[in-house]
Amino acid sequence: MAGFFKRLRFHLAGGITNTSKYEARCAALEKKYAKYISLKQTPNLLRYQELAIQIATPRRQSGLSKKKWKAMKKEFARLRKSAEVLDFFKLQRSSNSFHEILRWELTFEDTFAGTELNNAKWTPRPALIGAATEIMYSPSDENHLYTNGGNLAVGGNMLKILVKREQASGIGFNDQVGFAPIERKYTSGIVSTAQSHVQQYGKVEAKICFHRLEKGLYHSMWLGTGKRLPHVNVLRIGSKIEFSAFAEKSDGAGERQHVETWKRSLLKQNTPYVVTIEWSKEVMIWKINGVTLFSAPNIVDEPVYIAFSSGVTGNPRLFSPAALEVCWVRGYKPHDVTPA
Image (cartoon, rainbow, N blue to C red; front, side, top):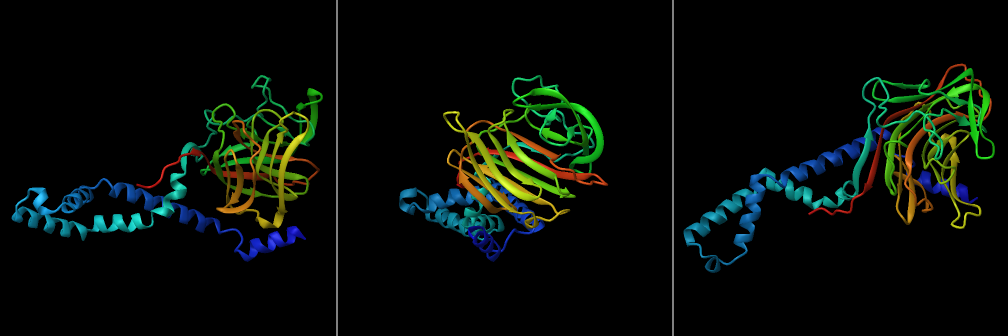
């Protein structure tokens, strides 16, 4: 019953914002902020601010003659009506809207320009602490094999991770057995920033789109450390949508977790969404198109890398490849600055 009321409140509040409208609103705010910053440096505004200080001082104390004082006030009145000064103070009155921009400093970005994966940013293999980074392995408890870039495609300003139905042999791994040969009838891909970018706290967001959701198939954007835990699902979509975080207990005995699930119908196939996670020492917040879907106390206090993967846990028919598309991805660190 609690889940019913949660979803009812969500839909009564308007649900998820349209992606195009959300991106347009973000772009407009960025443009507005850029104009605000550029206006701060214009000669007219700098001169206006200089005159404002002088006029605040009584003439007799300023040491200026009546003629010079009058000319200064005339210049001040003219500048006060100039487009640059009017625009600046109009933007300044709405400067509270710049708060979201000022909260973050960009530390990682990829827009997938060109036709090849940027290997300086992305590693097309799972990351595993304590193992040679060149080992190509797949999780033994799932029904696919990762290929070393073979199921990745870059073009049209996007990365595609493809899941195909095809026989493959390779190496599997789990914590109990370690590495062992496995046979699988599906192949897929994975990319991570394990070798190029990690961050502790901040914000990670990406624009993604998924094509085909067969039973037993999933697409995921996640954060990891190269160990089993901690692990954060920024978004995992399969038979259901999952936002979650997992970490060991401080004494190492057991697992802490936060898991929030929604019906898969919340998101549409072949439709792009901007997926975001924000986290600090205190809290973790999951969003889609700027709308908060889940929040919980933070349990991940280690640097993490960004990863995307698709996989198979069952036996989907997959007559044609399924795909996870990533249009862009960005990482930010907290940047506590307020507008001046």
